[in-house]
Length: 307
Image 1 (tube, helix red, strand yellow):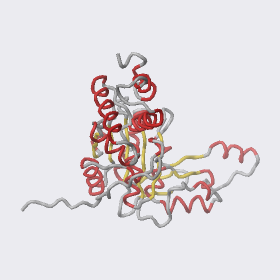
Image 2 (spheres, helix red, strand yellow):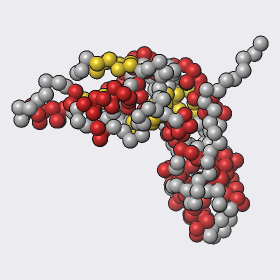
Image 3 (cartoon, rainbow, N blue to C red):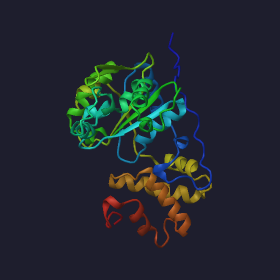
Image 4 (spheres, rainbow, N blue to C red):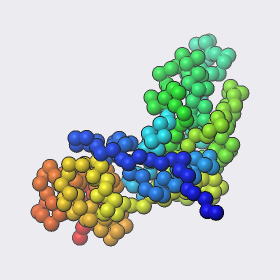
């Protein structure tokens, strides 16, 4: 007898923005449109306790996925934007060595290391109660991330653009993500996730290859550049009052040019183009349109990208 697909995560339909809607890359999580692949990936991650590795070109909505999932689940949300200087331990906890040195110079060094330890994103994801207690008992309650909600059932954590970090970073996270636990040496404190593991979402623009051992421990989701139909659906949610004929024409242009050049436009750039076309009275095929899209869409290709 075949199994029925029981969804632990079954997102609601997106809520159309009111008024003008937010700028594309600052949009509310309620406007995110989940497709079947994204929904299935979240369900698999919840069932297995594995992170989701979200791949795809820049601007296709990889980072927005995490915030939208948190909103749909009613969970807390924390994020870490990875840079070339990020170390694996930064995602677990940080030690304020400068403050420690200053206290030592002033002969007020604490015998307790706790005042110098700050929880990282994965600490908040694994045990938000312990992280909050650490900050509150050391007089630093203002460092609690604003989107960590007391009493929330769990946490979604976004590790954004992990491919920017040194290759050792994902390898050094294998133990923490595999066992959902780690030890803070300075405090001899074991931080472990509760029975219900958090949802960890890791994004990559694939600027460099990730270690195979790390990839094997993730649920893989690839987000493709949006086609014309999906772009039109995105516009209907973000800009519901926009003229549908203008939306369809710009969406076709964006999709076709993206396929021709191999440089897809981001959702935010597409929405910027729609706003500019509407407010300036410019449409595809009219004077000024080619120059407008050079400035809003095809910046990477330079001024000859439409030739």
